[in-house]
Image (cartoon, rainbow, N blue to C red; front, side, top):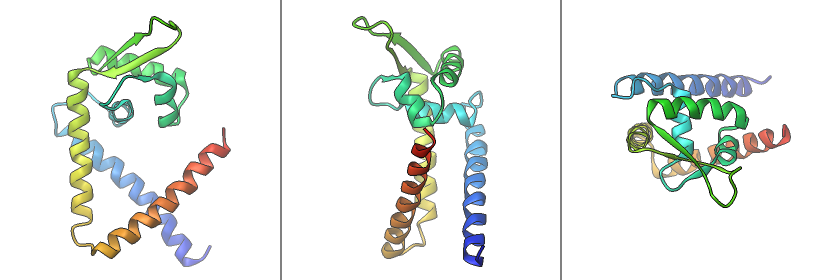
Length: 150
């Protein structure tokens, strides 16, 4: 590998790990200390807008529906999520956040908003645009890679 490739690999791994550790520490400084990072990301995937199917959420999280079922059961017991079946097709399970779940979602959203604002505070507009374009290309690569494994 070239030195630039080695540096990019190191930076991507370090960024991924740092963000997870910072998220975890930030979460523990809220009243939602009973949530793991995986659980807060599940709450984030459920979202605020509308009820979602288990399949939609599992797809967004890149996990199997069975794995999601276990996570949803834990979140229901903790009072963050509720589940219901629709009358037209009892096989379809819809999931949405409770008020407590919405509050956790909003706290996590604010964490991300503050992190991004702080991160780009010393960037020029051109640097922000360049970073966004580069990360968009990286994201497309990883989305395509994910799809190739399905």
